[in-house]
Length: 127
Image 1 (cartoon, rainbow, N blue to C red):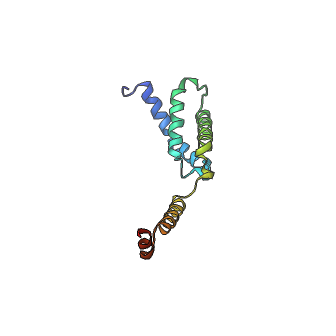
Image 2: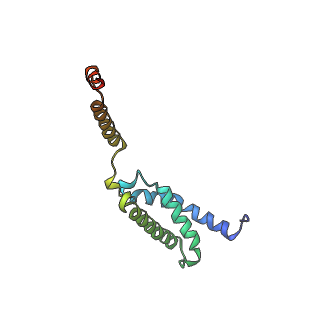
Image 3: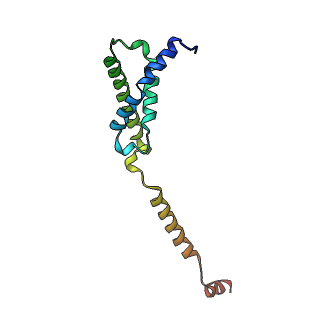
């Protein structure tokens, strides 16, 4: 991309809206997904889609352009939430890692306790 090219100018225009879109994404992102999704990722995807669809924009003002970007962001967030709520990625089914480790440790301790035998039991088995 040559400095001053149309593509370069597009990137500059879109980049000016990055903080605005990030703020919107942070406020609209489902609280249950905040640990899984970063608002910056949604903004980056939004800006990429806007860049690719640049020729489809038909507005004439900054307000219309901001509205166009908001619509793309809303659609992007909707798709991200839908993807995370599918099957295995359903955050409502997730459990903290510590709980899984505690269950695993408890099971291992129980198994080891069963497998251990006293010295007298060991001698009796050997006879």
